[in-house]
Every structure is written in structure tokens, then in C-alpha cells.
Length: 356
Image (tube, rainbow, N blue to C red):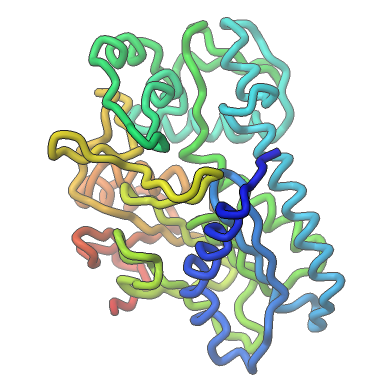
């Protein structure tokens, strides 16, 4: 369990207020002044917020809070299963199995299979066996360093999603030194799972925000869609480049600028050394941060596809504007907006996006 200092709790609460202001200001607008039942929590290394606006026409606070608590319990369960930094997780068991088979639950099986799928669709750009490389980089350190080239070169030898094998509910990586890192896809799966759980609890209108992975159940109680602000990179999370709408949809943003709160306070998931910026989106080909002209990519798809667009948004970030647009064009029911230098630089034909 993560323990917070008083200073960290204060910082996290400030972050919650800032990070959710865009959604709450826009989502509550013109909803007949419906005040949602909301609760924040710290999961998946980020601050999350679930806001319930309606439950079968009757927003009962006690029932809504109970539903949110169940959702966060499920969130923690999935984090303990899919994290590669928790020693007892199923992912860690696979990483430490030395190439032997590991029996896993349905959650791990689904996410790892999806990871392999997107490895194939991206021609290996998206590779969930990047763990041997990502383990060399520490973007949370107060004094981050660029790993030695020799260590990166060695780690890259063990990055190949094709080494993952399945046998029923068993998984193994035939390279004993390979490591899974599901950071580019797991949060989306969690968002999908929480959406399913809340709907089973009778929720008919809600916004689930897992640090930029947003899933909406229905629209606003008045029948109109939620309005979701797309954050402006490198700001204090109160500025946006524009808005999109969401009604039974998911909106996922991946960026090289991401800022998070952890137990030690604020950290940027990037750092600068000798005039060069190093961000957290790593190339499976070079072992270094991917070279991209983009700062962020936001994707929209129907509800239940958060895991898909989580992976796709990272792939688009890696491929850049032209490659990203070409990739999305091949995917059904997915739209995108690409941003750089604090503004929209491109979007797909069907993307409902209003620039500020």
C-alpha cells in the first residue's frame, strides 16, 4: 500500500482540483445543475477521479458512493495484478520466471494478448517487452541520468514481443531476460473494467478519469454529451487546446510532457541533459525516447475500447503526424487530434474537435 506524507496528500489534492477542473466545468454545464457524486483516489501512479451523475434516473448518494468504492477496489486489484513494479503481481511473476510457464488470470491474459496484437499492428513500434529497457530509465529521480549505451544495447536484445507464448491460461517469454511492461496499455484496460462494473451497479451517467484515460457512461442527465477538454501541453492543467464531446465513449491522451504526482511530490516524466530532452515514451528500436514532432495525441472511440485507444495513442505518438494519421485510418471507429507547440496540428476527418 502506498503511504502518503501530509505534504504529498496536500499536493495530490491540489492536483485533483487542477486536473479535474476542465472536465467538471465543462461536464456540469447545462446539466440542470446536477451535482455529481465524486471521489478521487491515487491508483496506477496517478490521481484518478470518478464522477457519477445518474443511476437509473435517481442519483442516490449512498448507492453512488458504494459503486465508486467498488470501482476503486477493482482498480487496486488490477494494479496489483498488472504492475511490473509490484513483486507479487502476475506480470512480475512472468518477468521472473526465467522463461518458464506462469498460470495467470483472465485480466493478465487479455492485456498481454492485446499487447501482442498491437505489437503486430505497429510493426513492432509498440512492444510490451520493453521492460528490459524501461527499467534502465528513471524519470522519477531527482537526479536522472541517461543510461550507458552498452546497457541499452544489451537490453534491446531482449525486446521482442514475438517471444511471448500462450498455452491456455499460461504465459511465458522464451527469452529468460525479457521483461513485460504494460504501461502503454494497462490503464486503458482498467478504464474499460471500471466502466463495466459501474454499469452493473446501475450507473447510467458518469465520467471515469484515470489520469488522462477518460471513459464516459452515457452523456449528461439532460441528454447532451459530456464536453471534454484536451489539455494544452506544458501548462498547469488549467489550459486546453480545445474540446471534444463524449457520450458512451472513451477519450485517451498520450503525451511526452506528462506530469504526475507520486509519494515524493511532483515529477515530470521527462528530463533535460546537455540541452536534450528525454521523455518517457521509449523506442523499441533504439532504447531511447522516440523522436517525434508531436507533444500529444488524443483519440476518441466508443465506450469499451479504452484499452485499444490507449495503445493506439502511444503508437500514433511514435509514428508522428503522417504515420499516426495513416495508422488511425486503418482502424475502425477511432478518431484523433494531434498537437504540437501547444496547439492542434492535425486531426482525422471524423474527429469532433473545437479549437480554443
